[in-house]
Length: 313
Image 1: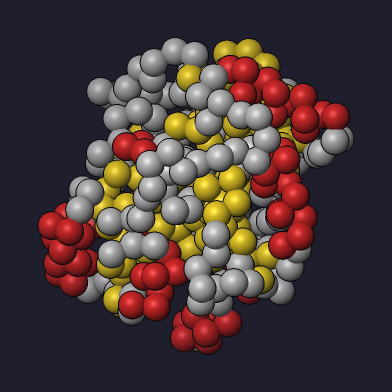
Image 2: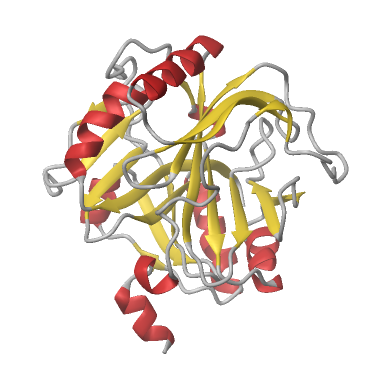
């Protein structure tokens, strides 16, 4: 599938007000106008796309959906044929849902774990429309997607890897340097980083562990780091440079309990012409000062849609 990367992420939260302050003042997000049919939700911009993050009212903090961007209509149509040929259940988004997402067309489907995904093309954008919520040098997105996401799966199966690699056409990077069973995958059109999505095995656990965002400069990382420390926000890992993707980053926890990794490229990604096996997580730094799994990781019953759970019983 000709997938660029993650186009947008949707979350549910019981505390929209916390995000309304945190998004612009800590992360530098711009607040995007909410669609007329979804005024209760909060939308954020990090570039000239209509939005990249959506936070909807909900009873618990959870990842609601992952939106993947197809290169265009032809790639979108080809992906539908691939899903149908592999008997993956898909539903087409109606005009109202497409308007909420700001896209021309979309389909919805679930991975073998139960996470909700969407595939779209033609996201609305307006040149020079991004205005950060605080002084900020901007984010890297566009042809590389909005960033990456790491989720936890209660079971790590061959079916999951088959779905991601054979059906969705993602490249398998490897298990990385983490402990336990983990898989890193990147979309076919991503030539910038090792992964767009990773699944980590956590027995009886499910939820988003962290979201990685690329910023334009090391200064943007440092200024965000200072704001996090000044506000005494909980941190997962200090500043450091990963082995897998040799970039500067740090991790801190958001109001929803998952972490943001704020990243600046300091060396070009080395690529993966063969499967690499890093001996250590980082070349320097990244001291673990908080839990690796925040309160966003819960039981499957807490983070999956009741209707979906009922259909599996």
